[in-house]
Amino acid sequence: MKSDKYHLIIEAAITVFAKQGYYQTTVAQIAREAGVADGTIYLYFKNKEDILLQIFSFRAKQIFDQFYDAVAHCDHSEEKLRSLIRNQLTAFQADKGLAVVFQAESRQVRKSDALTEQINQISKQYRNLVGEIVEKGQEEGCMRKDLYLGLVKRFILGAVEEVINTWVLAGGRYDLASMADPLVDLYMRGIGNPES
Image (tube, rainbow, N blue to C red; front, top):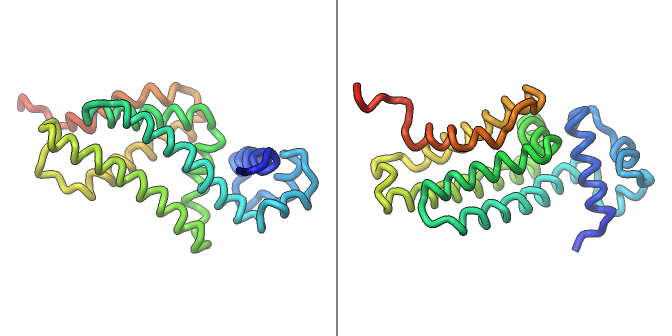
């Protein structure tokens, strides 16, 4: 079990990283935002990079637990995909700072092997979940069987990330979660006109 101060520091770091970016943030600024002494940070984390690692590790687990729960309660693959995407967009809309850290900072902070590995594991976990949904859709007959599964998984992940990035860049000025159904409709129906 992590202590209340651990969680307080994690949330403060998300806030400061989202406002200033990882490289411009100091441990002292995170401590100030958390309302703790600078030295308290080092009781829970080795350094600033460790804080970012813990954000990805701790918060990703929380989010993925929500994803798995949402998907488990659906019967059909399209419903599972809608639930996954809706939950992802809703989670980031509820915590814009986390969206900024996950989307923007994960792309910029790649000098650390540990951080790169953590980000790659999160992406792999997401792609595996999408892969399970697509394979179920193929079994149900609502998704094509001639799909290259690796490409489909990356297509879905990339499209969702771009929708979140666009929302972040727009300052969160619209309902991100409302993009879930149009996005899944695009996945399921494509952009071609079947009448042509």
